[in-house]
Image (cartoon, rainbow, N blue to C red; front, side, top):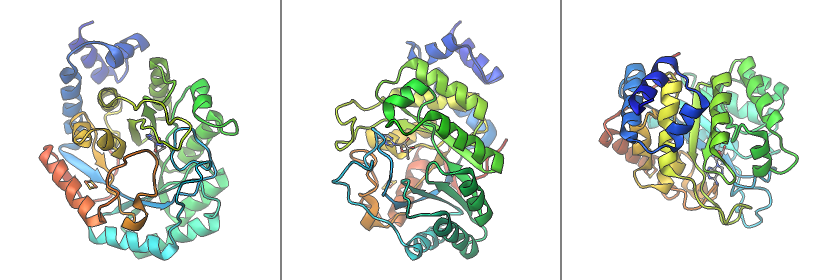
Length: 345
Ligand code: 5AD
Ligand code: FES
């Protein structure tokens, strides 16, 4: 099949065979054909709109030792921090003034944030800003915990599956973590009624094209509202310190494929993409992404939320980050919308 026919088929049926997908991922063809079609499909569903979510990185304590991650529990050099409830509320207030109507509270799996502590924070944000949506990104918890957090007012949850191949999952994580539990969490979240975001890293160590096919198939079954992907970037204090970074090109191909497979999806142009290439996020938007997540964390802790080396936006104030990203979105030909940014199914 010619590349144009493949892209037609993907747009029209939202699906392709494994070998067709493999060609889109690996093949030698004019990528502009794939990219421009993804941009058209995004335009049909969302116009030129780009949604913003204010990211509040509220703790870098983590009980897990994921091999790719800079804030893994075995990194004794990590400078650990935890924001207090009032610091988190201040970030939310500042974000509100800057126009945000949705926040993402992201952190490591920090046992300090019990259900009681976290529910109190979620409900306090909701009382202070009833017109805002609270998104959580705090890893694997029990179903009961997710239920309590939902009752406290959280409505969205981001939990990347990281890789849908059990074998590959085992190579990225310590033995006590499992893909089964990760997936159980995602299905629980969905059943409870959360809008769910999932996703994976591109070019993580030992990843093959077959792993990526499994990722796409898993996403087809989960049908998440948001799909976040970004290139793997090695961190000097992680197990994978010596592995090469993922490819920006492949990440962009995948964003376009995701846009065509999931026309309604919220797809962020991620910080990792902007870290590996100066205009990475702009290229992500042009390839089909429609969300950006400016950092609202206090400047004093930014550099400490050190998932991978050379992470951008660690020196800027929230307002600077917002202004910078706003300018980038505009220059790329898109427009920031200030609302809750709901998925259009
Ligand atoms: N490179 C790129 N992305 C990473 N993440 C964690 N470590 C890295 C890394 N070294 C991503 C994971 C996680 C998200 C918060 O950040 O996919 O889910
Ligand atoms: Fe944070 Fe540019 S987006 S400084």
